Image (tube, rainbow, N blue to C red):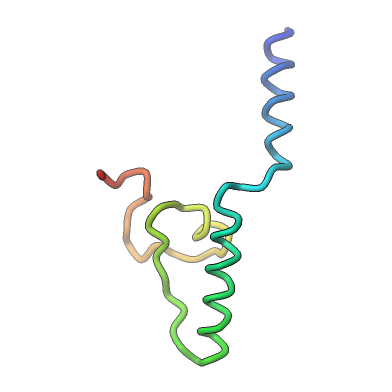
Length: 71
């Protein structure tokens, strides 16, 4: 019904927005590129979210999802 249409429209509108960590992703990618150019290791841990690891297809090296950390 009408509620489902409204929910679907809201969900679809969010697909085209930038993720709030998009700027951080660019900075991490630039950092990793510089390290790679210098033949340095490119292992990293982004502790405040999974998004950057997910977008770069990088592991978290055994650390849990950031949502599971207690602050």
